[in-house]
Structures are given as structure tokens and as C-alpha cells.
Length: 107
Image (cartoon, rainbow, N blue to C red; front, top):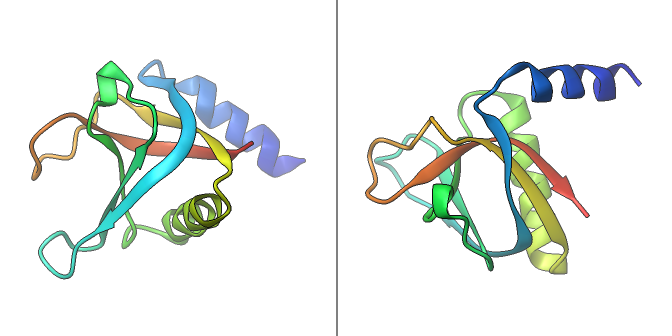
């Protein structure tokens, strides 16, 4: 219960956080060395504010690794997901518009 309450508090405490999209994960992109552990998730639906997908740095925390594990699970089972992301936090080393993942919900 504490996790749900904390998650909701984080979710609603930032005005930059919004439900960007829901759909099925079409691609999970990872790079060998130059990104330092960043991965990019693209859905089968496109959101104009996050048109090139949703990113997260897997080296930042265990929570990032948990999101990646959930994304891989959803990808392989073709389950629908909702991604909540910071639309103002674009990944600076790649062209296009990517939003930093804050929450991934398997539906």
C-alpha cells in the first residue's frame, strides 16, 4: 500500500508528468557503449509530444532496471502498457522528441 501511495504522490506532484501514450511496445532499443545504459521504448501508437519514444537510463537506479524488466515482459507477451513520462526531459544525444519515463503500467 505504501508503494502505491508513494507512486501516486510522485505521479501527481509534478506538472510535467502526464500520461503520454498507451499501446503495445513495438521496439526496445539499446546501444552497446556510447549511451551509458540508456534504452528507448517505442510504442505502436505515436504521441506528438514524444514522437520518437520514451527513454530511461538503466544505470541510474534499480528502479530503472525494474521498468526495463517490465517493458521486456510486456514486449514479449504483447501486453498493452501506459507510459507516464516527463515531456520536458528530452534525451539530448538523439534527434527527435523522446520523453523520460517516470512510470510504466502493464494493462
